[in-house]
Every structure is written in structure tokens, then in C-alpha cells.
Image (cartoon, rainbow, N blue to C red; front, side, top):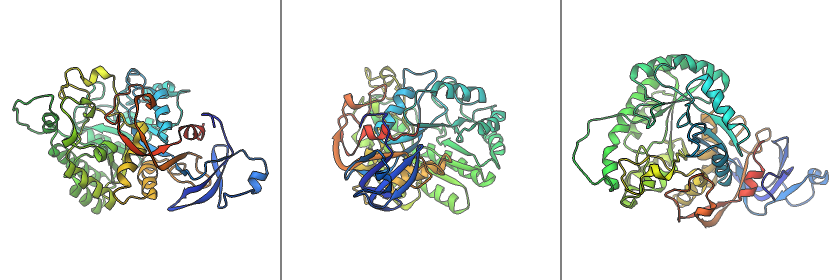
Length: 437
């Protein structure tokens, strides 16, 4: 089957419907799931009627991944990434919907005009469905309702310097203004939850990862999340903590939820797959903010994920050009903070999760359903049910593969996962074939 071709039905001996894996025939009409027939073995009214059926044998068919944390960087920084390469990489990894962050594009998605410019830049370049977050920055409160009406999925803000000048972080006063604007809209405010705290100024080797890690301690996340929980309880606006890396705020998050805060939280594949103890000196491809922490912290994140304290897992795909990673000097303090992983999220998650007692329905819940709910696309995506978009990923959860440079579809190939052997290979052409046009 060639990428871009279409079929009318997909047959497999393993289709994940709800929490059950069973043989089924998925009938597709006009980009939607028309019906799911229980018998995949022979002629049915649909096959007899001349449907073009793709039989994928025993490869698993499940809902396409909804990755709601992706930095595409177009327009303005297309040397870093762009819609063509980002969405092609997404499709190759089983991601059928991305939600683009309001930065690091130029201009950022912080006004209605800028949102229109972003949509124009994406037009005709997307291999998968694409939605957009808006941004909250100082002084743009009157832009929020027009952007909601125009279709943004919600908004993101920073409580610390964002790394780019055109997307400044907000003050407490800005947050109160924004929350008042968002009350009653049903929208969501996403928080990069780190705050500046006093740090010791001791000199240390900038090539050592520990030097960078000490510059972003757990308390930065803890204090930021304290602010988020208080705002969430006060205004009853849905708040969402992006890329939680520290386990220390988990008790605070849980207490806020139990007190009635409409609060959700995500973590990322790199916090669940990588650990500070195994990052070599000068390996700046591992730098991100908040930072990758230690093994003991990682195990607490996995436990929280299993307990339902963390709601979902995303990529936080944040690429840049190789020079910005300062590989020549190996200086963690000067390198851009961001990890490229969009294409490999499903396999990264399953490689570890399958060893920790997570099931395939758990994968759908954490990577498809919960993420679709966050960006209010769960009436179309995240489940294999009639009426939903026919966004399917077809993959082999038992098959291993090596991450090689030649197979990476990101514009810039630098990633900490190069050379790793992962579990769960996506059938790329099938993913491309079943995207909703």
C-alpha cells in the first residue's frame, strides 16, 4: 500500500476497541468510521459490495495518537522544523493529530491576526490533522476571546523566561487578568510551571549535566505549581501543567484535585525514558527544560502515572538547528533546551510501559483519549467508534527496531534516541494512508 492511497475498510485479527482486542473489520466512509464489524474472516455485506479492504493480518489497529504538545516553529523558524517535516514525522510514528504550541514560531500565536498567519502557513503542508494552542502573554487579554471563537484549542503561558523574546512570561497580575477572561468559556490554560528561585552561584563545569540540573532544581516546579493550584481553585478555570519532570509536586497536585480544582497534568516521553545518571558529559541533545532528573524521580513519575495522578503523556517535541545545541563546546548552560521525539513517542512509551505492567488499553487512554479530551477533540478522536474520524495507527507491539538517522523524518535529525532499540514498530505507510484529509 502506497502512502496517500485510500481504502474503504481495514481488517485485522487484533483491533483495539475500548478495552478489548478482537478480530474486526473497520468500515470507513468519507474519512469517518462507518461501522466496526466483529467478524474479520470472510465476506460480509461490505466486502461483497466492492469495498477495497486492507488486511493487515495480526498487526494491531488502534486509535491514532493525539500529541497535544508539539513545537512546529512555522512560520519564522522553519530551519528548526516546519509543518511538512513535523507532520510527516508524526505520521511515521503513529501520531494522527498534533496540537502546535504558540511558540517558537515568529510571530507567536498570541493574537487573532497571528493565529490566521499560523493557519495560512500550515495550509497544504500537513500529513496529519493539526490544531493550535494560543498564547497568554502580558497585555494580550483582549485577544483571548477572539482566538477562542476562531478555534484555538486553549492557551499556554510561561511562569519563567520562555527562551524566546517574542513570548514573554506572565506575572501574577497577568494571570489573574487572563483567568477572568477565560472564566465561563470552557477553555483551558496550560502552564510551563517553573519559577525563578534563589540559587547558589558556585562555579562548575558547564559540560557536566549535573551543572545544568542543579540550575533547575525541583523547587522551581514546586513553587510554580503551588501558584497554579491556587489560581485553579480560585477561578475554577481548567488549568493544565505541561511537561511535569519533578515528582515533588505530585502531592500538591493531588490535594488540589481532591479539593475540586479542574486540574490536569502531563509528563513526557523523555522524563519517562531518560535519566540524569546516564547523560554523558557534553551530550547537549539531552537538554530540556524542566530538566531530565534522576532514576528515583523517574520511578515516582511512573508510579503516579499508574495511579492516575498524571493524566497523559506527550512528546514536547522541541527541535532546533544543530548549532544551537552547542555540540562543539558541549556547554549545557548555553545549549538550546528541547528534545526531538515526535516520531518515536508511541514506541518510546511502549518500550518502558510494557515492562511496568501497562497494557495496550492504557496506551490508548494516556496517549489518545486523555490528550484528545484536553484539546476538546474527544468527540472526533481518541476512540475507535462509529462516527469518529478514521484516524488509525497500525503497528506491531512485539517488533523491535533501531532508531537510525536515515529513518528520521524530523527536519533536524539530532535526538538523544539515535541508536536505541525500541519496542513497537509502526507501519508507516498505513499511518499515512489513513489520515483524515
